[in-house]
Image 1 (cartoon, chains in turn orange, blue):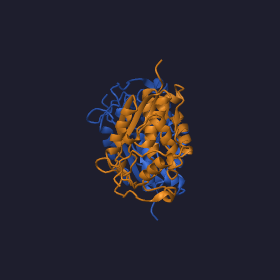
Image 2: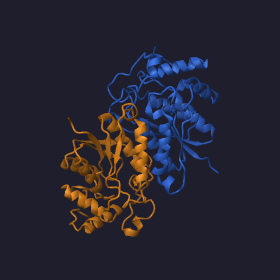
Image 3: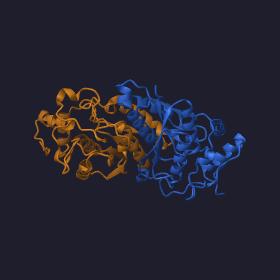
Length: 230
Length: 230
């Protein structure tokens, strides 16, 4: 009997790489799904491709969507990415790097791929602790999408396939995620978390994502393999 | 005081055109949203542009998304569109013209646009009677998406903006929709409902959508302005 398939949302960052390794460990045939969505740099997609190959994803699909048409975020419009905000600021409010409805859109595409491929499981590396300011990283959002997914498709409503959304990192600290990923053999040097990498893929070291990542390795007591610009 | 804005999903068909006219009548500033999603023909988008202009949408935005990457439907893959199925077949099961998770994806983009534009209302022309086979045209799907939307965005969770999804055609028969639209002054000749139009935009007359449309005009006792190939 063949393994059940799971769709894994893969950004190329530390969290989604860990998520992919977890899905593999649970025995799923993994369909990694990334988006070309008007990111400032292609470095993110290059990292996703490295991660998919290194961690043995059975397929890696990149879908083009044009979030730049809407703007409204430092990640999709000409708005500067905040730097050097430090720990306190990270916990406050919704940051400008929030992309409107992004995880709703990503999960909607994952749902379409899951239905076409007969997959009953979707993995997403959202985290409600470090990204408490992002509404679409919270457990109640994941629960609401699960409810929607099970009403939205032919697979769920006619063929009786329950769809599960897995968010295994939801309640983990960054250091715990790193330790879990290392235990699964991930080399985090191939991942890229930075919101504002240089043209050659160097992490800026100063955006919220870089600061969280740096602190994660320190808290985990592990050397940080990231190549930072500063 | 300026009018509140609403995002209106606009395919260029009879239903979504009626929906746009209804949103305008309710006094909304309307942001029409269409998708270039691997449809077999550009005729659908040409119809959407005609409808947006004729009905006075304040803006018409077309977003590129690549549903062909997934396939799985007669509308996005090389699968023939069923013809001449007749009334009974239309009510049975999920047809091959169902596009996996399409309305979930469309509403996710509408949600993003609504958040960026400060709109608290989304209109979608789904219909649970004529399209009973499509899971994502049912009232419980709309309710689940509304619940999701109000957990998914900064606007809803931080700024206290409730988001409403309007599906004014949900419980209407095609003839009722046509009569309502005529009362609002819509010239349905500019709309295109066909799943398989000719290169020059002629409706095939034989797919499920054409059959429903034809019957709708007959039931409404109105002349059908559609240019059918047969």
